Length: 201
Ligand code: MN3
Image (tube, rainbow, N blue to C red; front, side):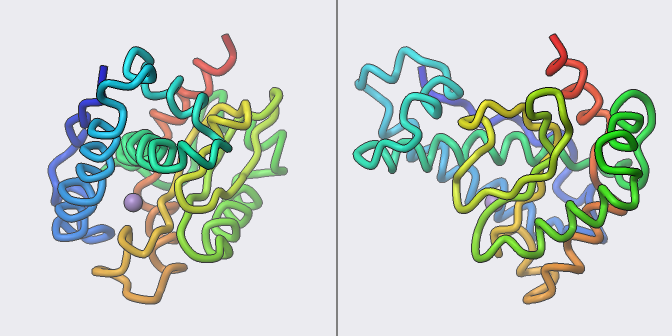
């Protein structure tokens, strides 16, 4: 059935000055679009073409012969989730049920923030840092390359892309500065709250 790139949920310049329109233009318009094109080219005419993308990701995880399909499908999904994890009105402390759960499971927002920033900074090479709900508990995890917590039975709540293409035009080698800007100014807690509620069902 293929996968259609979702519209960016804000203008390309909406995350400035923290992430530039130039970065979003390449990241959404080239990197994400290319993963989706390759995924659609690879899945077309195969038995996997009857499945939605989440099921294709699950079916191809850890299958070396399907690595190309998995990598492009997972990157298509991860990036769609990342665009929604950011908001021009985001950042700072959450409120509501997800905030209470962060207090319970991490011992407060500041400890959560430190753990997320540390995971994002220490992911060696390309990958992702995530807030997930795992067996009823909020956790921070990191994944390499295209890997996604979807295939480990976890519910993603928020993500930060730490591939160099996510920050290099704006921050060059200063990955920690990009991470701080995302956490303090951009994380979309409305999206997180909705994911947290959906994961309870
Ligand atoms: Mn990326």
